[in-house]
Length: 186
Image (cartoon, rainbow, N blue to C red; front, top):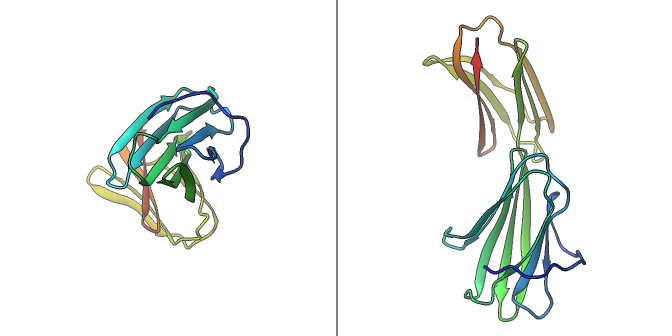
């Protein structure tokens, strides 16, 4: 995919963090991140078969705006994904003749884990109010397991100070999504 000059108008949003603006009468679309990030962001474009056509990493605290040129690609559906440690935005676009149309946008908020001072904390924005299962595993056994309902704002804090030293991982499962966090107890 090619990159060219930036446009200044924004008329189509792809979730909270990524804008996709089709360029009228051209087989191009402007993709931009709305805010400066304190973490690196990966952006990639795939075709309907899942093959990656373009991939790049935007370094932290960098603004991003680029025109994606679909003129040398066949008409069809493509996926543009913005992914960082906290949010994944997935947008499906339809390229047809001389136009690009945004078909769908999905924002996935990821849990925030923190293990310090003898505690493990988890915060998760469960937008779809899916049932949540939380586990801590390590040293070939399950140390904690709970089914925690479907609250939109999920928070959990556990005392891990009495656990044996070693490697562990915590998992939050929400619907068909699973998020793991690896931590070490000293």
